[in-house]
Image (cartoon, rainbow, N blue to C red; front, top):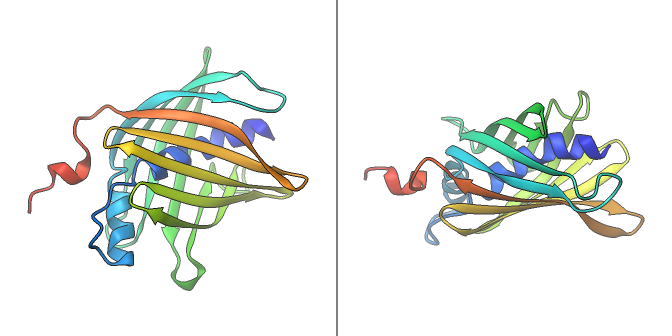
Amino acid sequence: MKSVIVSSVLPLAMAISATAILPATASAGERDKQFFQTVEGKWVGPGEIVAGKYKGTRFTCTFTGSTPELKTGMTLDGSCRVGVFTQQMTATVEHKGRSGYKGSFMGGSSGEGLDIVAGNVVDPRKVVFAINRNQLNGVMQARIPNDDSMIVTVSVKVDKQVVPVIGMNLKRVDGAPVGKLAKN
């Protein structure tokens, strides 16, 4: 189960957290779109499983982020490597009207991954998503302390506590954030 978290939650968490740079004046819908557009580009970085059976396992991920043209959301596609093993990763999230944000990691719970069942852009530098697979419930939080880095934390609910399981630090490797490249 923890390998499911590592292989499917990390990509989305990274993509989402990489998108937290928004102007304060935008409306909520426009603000969310701007937030997700900041994930566009290439991101790399290390991560570690910080709890559970695989505690101490370190990995490195590389992702390319993109956004749909007519919808609010994003896709993060790439891979994570542990030693000589590489796992392809894909995560997608979109706004689904009154249902809010929905999406999947690695094909969702009907495949080998997790479902994104809810979420929101909390502020210009943070996003939080609820994740689920069968009896596993958790939260993925992404924070962007500056334009070129992102911190992702994935936590799961164990009994009545939320326990951090995965931590990740990503760096932008394609230059300035997308929002700074756009011409007005």
